[in-house]
Figure 1 (cartoon, rainbow, N blue to C red):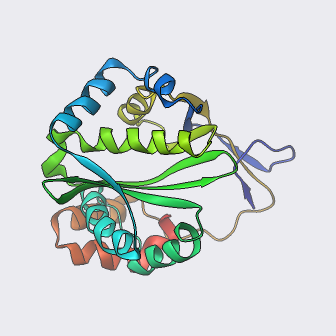
Figure 2 (cartoon, one colour):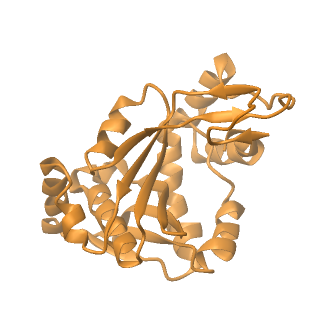
Figure 3 (cartoon, rainbow, N blue to C red):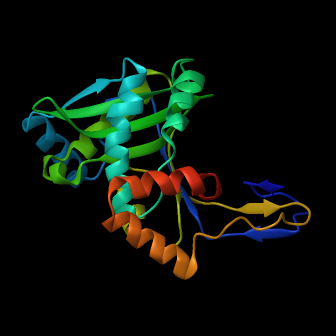
Length: 233
């Protein structure tokens, strides 16, 4: 059993990954003031450029609108996308019950970025981010993150968790810190003997798959997700 926290008596312990958390308060303006000037500038740029943010109102906003942007994003990274039924179940089990939501950024009526977030027990979690790279110059990603933070403040969350950052991802760490996030080490402990290893996504096979996803048609990314996502989540 893997315990994603420090624990006594662990048979093995892994270090290296990081977690980034933004402390929140009811007054979102005070949180805004903690952002780096470049972040505030990019938020203003998106607002001047006419980018708008709306909250999802139906399953189609997640299963179709978000999914299409998410597929572009996963292909850029060369990783399999979750099966579409995963997002149908996410809407029914989590979003519809009030434990999260979806924000969609639009420019000239077209979706250009989206964010899935989860909320419970005073913490909001930025779970999935997706965007159309052809619209990056609009800075919609910055505006949608700011709306996520404002929403979390309004809902009374005490913190926004940007999630895990793997070792070596300094660019991602810098981006998260620019929002005033506090960097914390992640420590995972294992109890008992490890299970049989799952199919590996690393090595030559992993590099080949990533290349096939990046350069192949979208069906390659979707098919890989159907077959392998349970092992790579």
